Length: 415
Image (cartoon, rainbow, N blue to C red; front, side, top):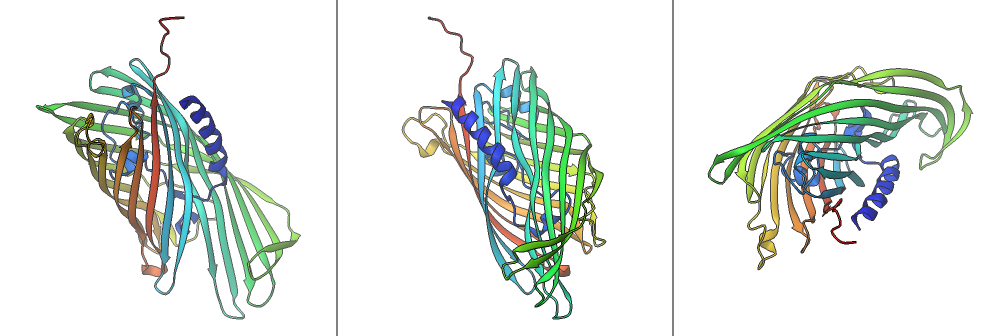
């Protein structure tokens, strides 16, 4: 049964990853868009903490974790995002529904194999600036993003110690549309930018855990992403266009396309986390992620008031599971998760650093008679600021994830 689900879900996510608008943030105009992927729902519900060597849940933040899988594991997650955007004078609301990740993990003795597809970043915004009757007005909108297809291998060196590595093929398309016009004149100039992105990057990781005191264990995780390059093939088209009150454009005069190529630098990144807990009972951990400033501005999104600084993220979170093998109470078999994260995104506009912080909670609901479970999470956060003529985003993300498990490759004893 799980094999049919995996095939169907892979086809669905492959189509949706190209079509979905995964964000409504005006900050997605910059760089490669709004980086949405922050791990599986189980880890996101704990502020991003992923340090336990889990045998039935996938950890997509560290490939060393694949070596701990005991059953074939299928992970799928999606989010309903509601965002309130406001400036010092105005506000508006936006909603988006997205698929977040799809992954499969296979246990292979001391090895573990993981592969899947992740919509990594998204571009999605609609902005209008209004001037006087004689001044130029502008309408901006954008869509698209970057996807990652990955495959990784983990190896258990000894009890409690695993290493791993994965390779990611990055691909995607971003399209931005800038229309400039004068009030009450139904004609203007449209600039269409289309960017095809592609590249490869590599990650390596290690996970270690050991008994600390009686039933309490120490858990740790470290992973490192090498610096990589995204090849950007840019096409710019200038045209004269007519528009109506809904800003539907009718192109009347098109100039010849201008094609350029540019390499975007994705800097190296490392993430470290550690914590204490009792396996299948409780866990508390902290994490830190650091990334150098990148060179990810392209021909169309590099205004003078924008710079990039070092990115960093601080996380704290954990879970509590009353009694994972209780036969009398279903609520005792529910996993309760919570966490907090604070992030410096690395984007600086009008000398104002763009920061992101959120509180996360979630539950893991076991499917009776199986090792599978359904996970539900809530993320309440704020990004940006109304200072320096910028936009503050207050968001509530409701996510649902599935972790389905099944035993494959069992040798038949009877024909």
